Every structure is written in C-alpha cells, then in structure tokens.
Length: 363
Image 1 (cartoon, rainbow, N blue to C red):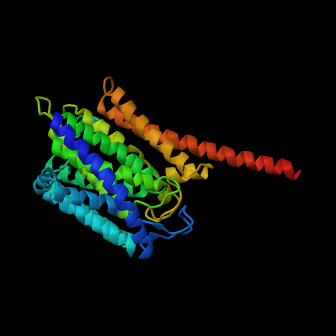
Image 2 (image 1 turned 90 degrees about the vertical axis):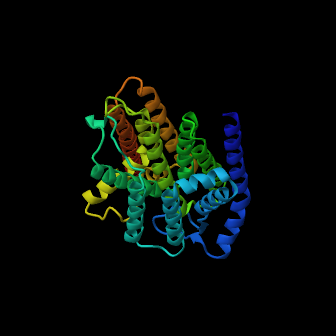
Image 3 (image 1 turned 180 degrees about the vertical axis):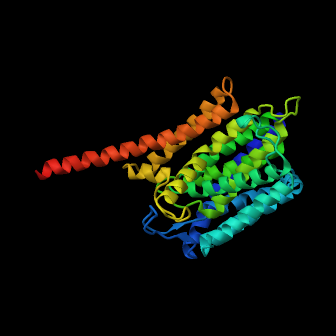
C-alpha cells in the first residue's frame, strides 16, 4: 500500500506543478486568440476573461495517461468512459469558443450518459431509498441517464463565480479518491489525484479576482467524471447479501456531494416555470447570484457555499450511524432549501429596511 500511496502523491504533486506551469501559457494564448468569456448583462465580470481552466485540466489528464502505464491501463479498461469524457471536453471547448445550441449540448450529454450505462456503469439499486432495492434494467438505464446528465448540467450551471466550481469539485474528488484508496482501487485513485492536482492549480488562478475561468469544457468534464466515478464506486464496493436492498453508505455520501448544485438547479428551473419563463433561459437567481446580490464579494460567497457543502458532507457522515438512506437524503435537500429560504428572507428584510430608511430620510 505504501508504494501505491507514494505513486498517488507523486501524481497529485506532478499534476499540480504541471498546472502551475501550463495555465499562465494558456492564459496568454487565450488572450491573443480571443478565447475569452465576454461580459454581458447577466455576467458578473466586467472585462473579457480567458476560459481555459477546463482545457488545462483535460490536457494534464490526457498527458498523464500518456506518461503513466497504470492510467493507460485504466483508460483501456474504461474506453467508453474515456471517449465520453473526451467528447464532452471537445463539446465544451467548441461551446466556449463559438457557442453551441442548448439542444446540441443536451443531446450529446444524453448520448454520453447512455453510452456509459450501456457499457455497464449504471445505477443498479436505490439501496433502500424509499424502500426500493434492485432496479429493473430499464429503470437502471433511465435513472443513470437522468442523474448523470442532470448532475453534469447542474455543475455546469454552478460555475458562476470565482473559485466556486473548483472548490466544490476539489472537495468531491478528494472524497472519491479517499474512498478509492480505502477500497484499494489504487489506479482509480491515481486518476482522481491527477485531476485533483490540476484543479488545485486552477483554483490559484481562478480565485477572485480570477485570471481565468473553468469554461464549459471544464465544468462538463468534471460534472460527468464525478457522477460516473461515483456510480462505479457504489457498484464496486457494494457486497450483495441476502437483503437485495441492503444499505450502502456511499449512496448518501455521494448525494451529499451533489446536493447543492442539483437542488439549486431544480429550484431555479421551478421558479422560472412558475413565472412563465423557459427553464433554460439564463438569469441571476442561482444561490451564488443571491449571495453576491446580498452585498458579498466573490471570495465570501464561494467560502459560504463551500462551507455549506462541507457541512452537508459532515452531517451525512454523522447521520449514517443513526438514520436511514431516505431520511438522510431528504434532510440534505432540506438543508439546502432552508439555507436558500433564509437568504431570501435576509434579502427581503434588507430591501424593506433600506426602503423604510429612505422614506424616513425623505420626510
């Protein structure tokens, strides 16, 4: 085990150093060739910012596959996942540069999700959630496609302020890597360590004031890889026993990892539909937008959401000893919704207070 941990640590450190060296060059390249995110009425930045953070993560991951025989072996054994990730990365790059229609992006995400389900990486059971155990094959495909596509999109939508997507992804990938190591999936842990190292380097350049953004290439790549590897770990660590619906503690841990972006996306879509708008028309109603509107700078908003994210994970680890799967997942969702409700109330109170003060001063 010691040799494996040394290899994983070297992979992490190597990817971090490679990111620190590669990102400045990519930033200069993107500024010269106009590979930037231009400001508009719904974006928070005021000048064009390079969108090459995700490209750096993808390049470092690809280079590690060329340099490491272990990672090459992992890619060969998981060709469909590798091809799907590369496809989504290319789609993201094209979207960052020329802009692709939402329909095209969505169809490619659905196709990628179907491909990994067809290749065998799919949700096979709900492990006791709502009393449901092993799923029929059609339900396995449907749930896998819905969740992988949904998580990928929700993480893409979360990438809205400096540092946020990188921080949340880093926490999630650290958890995935730790679980992989604990279950002796060392090659998978090495792959995750490389991604984590490149992400940590990216955060240095994405921390407010950001010198570069992740871009759709990075958010689609990371959302997909996190959801797919979570499914792989759940399947490979689950030991079938006499109870088909046996509890798997990783289920609630992974729902904790994705609860904030998923619930926030569902909330925003529901509000848009309620007011007669298309759920796919972008606005400034996501949780990170609300924090910024509440007179916070990017650093503060990112830290608060990061702390909320970690708090949900810690709560889940503690609650696993006393509560069942269904209750834990419901409570995770309620934590996110309660936080958003409190924030909405605080914003309303601030508006009322300012209006009352204005009326007093005018008199």
